[in-house]
Image (cartoon, rainbow, N blue to C red; front, side, top):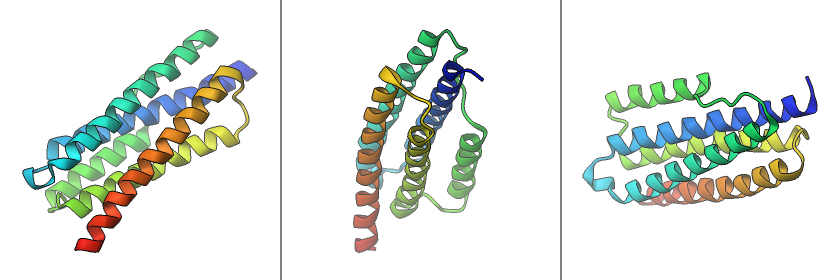
Length: 154
């Protein structure tokens, strides 16, 4: 596998997990009740963020002349299925929603960390992934702070 193919594979993997993140936040948005309405703006912001990230990543892959992945990962699909099951069993309280959102943020944060550790990205791709990883870490920390504040009140 060439250097370009390896870089494209890393970027495609990140595209898929960003698509998973969008789908996860959209699922959470659909399930949020009125008492947690404040979370809608937060989840909308992060869904929009991942849509933008996916566009940036697909542009980089296309610039390499490689095939662009636009779907969701198998792990992400399973993650959404778990949210569906949880909502059937009363998992729609604020703490449950934030626990699940933070679990999803842990997954995307780890994917970015792994992408950077692989050492297969250079130039514009590396700069883009570093910037996106910083924004993902900030989003994770914001979700975690909301979760922790909810735990303190519970």
